[in-house]
Image 1: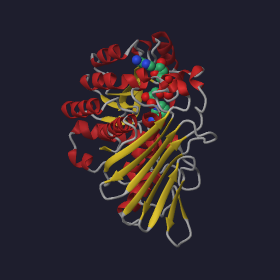
Image 2: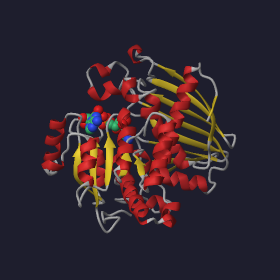
Image 3: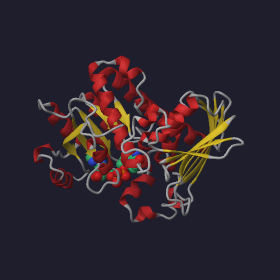
Image 4: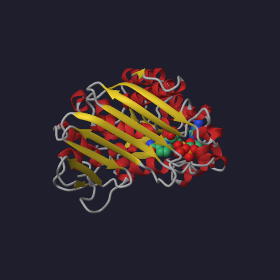
Length: 389
Ligand code: NAD
């Protein structure tokens, strides 16, 4: 159980790029990183607008001379200080992730980066290699994967409770962008502009989340090939898709589907992963994250509740309040940031024994997501053909 005691005997000196006062995702980064005192926010280049970023940073209590105009100055100035930051989180629009990650690693920092990690598998490969060379990590914020019940599912599948896996159904299909809301909303505007998001909208922005949850639940399956069809129902978004369907074949003969959509009218989030084996199925839905459905063929449905003593120890290890009281996205993110702190510390100490079996979404997870999106786009743009992965 996590009760707020620091995971390490120190708090990592931490900075942020992006995630400013008007951003969607900055607050959850700060909340998750500082929840258990594993990170202390000391510096940042929080905003594309330097003045606004400085005002925001000082309003958070950061010294004015450590609120920088841009990430280059942040990394150079902090490297020159004996008490400079050791880690940085990147919460900027997607087109900037690669350059900022690379600069951070070159400056000797550990990194937490938003998804998608970058635009191409070649870039992701380069970042993964740079991590190895610099002996630093990149943690990728697939936040939902920090929910305890994802890890419960992983253990149940590993224990063979579902039998051989046959089908994986994944979806992240909300309805918030059924109209051209980007005309009014700054945070949506860049999401449908290829200059900022690269080759895809919902595949990169949404689908990579359930894809990574499924990879976490069923780590032994590899996607062999896929076929993708994508649509731009709001025409001005073309060539970027606001809806996509993907069919996948896995190396054990299993098949999978992904539905990613921003035009699923009436749906709040609609992120679900259902894993179906030869004996039973498991289903997790992010709108009811405290319950995991376990359905054995021929038996009544079992609803496994978060925080209960019957869960696997590795799921209970991330529990914060016990059963009954709901936990949600903020707790899942805090669990991830706690893991990032442990991985950063173990990497600094060269503790390979610890890192060998320690789970967290790292640079390789980022690479897998980027490569998958790349292949989906290739398939869709060639007329929805099968593409090897
Ligand atoms: P946003 O547009 O709401 O905010 C972006 C922030 O970055 C703003 O504060 C902006 O001023 C700042 N910024 C932009 N360019 C910058 C630069 N070069 N240097 C410093 N600051 C800069 O975007 P958002 O919705 O918060 O998304 C940011 C990232 O987070 C995206 O990559 C997005 O895909 C990701 N995201 C992830 C999740 C998740 O669940 N993991 C959820 C939402 C968004």
